[in-house]
Image (cartoon, rainbow, N blue to C red; front, side):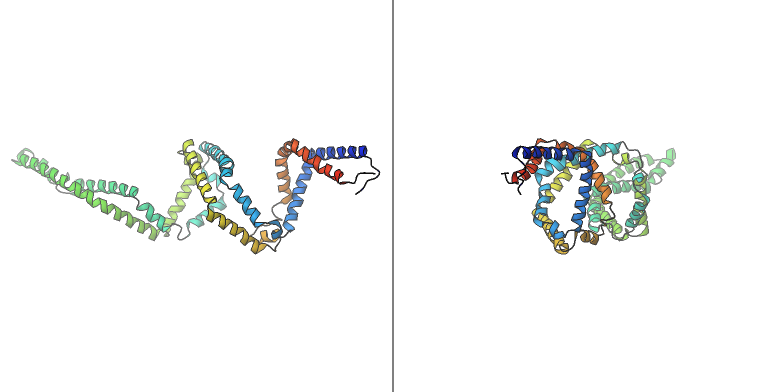
Length: 354
């Protein structure tokens, strides 16, 4: 292009004026409105485009892997997640509202239906939990106490209503029974001493069998009405408890440990080679299935209604939310240099006037 009527000075003035106009326009209220409208127009354009034209599988996979890389997780995602979790935990500890306040009726109705689902309780989990040595120790203590109480109350040789009671009632009229009573007490002590290790040996194996029987019982009957009702009643009880009470035992240290464990797990899982291959395969499968469709058609296939999400309202809200940051970013010297280079490149591309 050639503008022979413009001399070098005029061209320089026009260049400077255009750069100043673009800078001011981008920073103005009109720029904010145009940002929202451009977001809307751009989104509509994307919806009308072919999926294959919008998605580059390798580039998308690389972007996801970069966001989920260890440095990004450790120095970006994790600190934000940690701060958010600790702040939320502190808020919840002060929350006296019942948990049910935050669960609407329609959600409760669906959860009730979930609790009625057959096979909801994993069989292997039940067996592993109930037959664990921690429960075995508890069961041994419970059974040991029960056997001791039974021995004291039901055994005629040791119970208050048995031989000891008879000897006491005989009183001074029972000639020679005093010595017999003393002998009996000695024998009773010897019997108890002999029975103690035998009882421990018995409980060692019986507690394990009892827990295995309990696990079988739970697995066999956990879909019966009584167990379904138990699940519903436990949930109803939780809904009645204050939210703060449910997290009262989670202090800051416990919250930090939970966050550290969750972060370490996520960082490990997302960077596994097998997970990365599966992620890339999923992206390629999606492209193969929908590459010839428009983005709108692909979203509709998964039940998403692009026209029902309120695109204009979302774009207006997004533009309003990011506008303060955008204005600050536009004041960066590098942005001004980019505007000057972009506008200036137009004038530099023109032929020098004769």
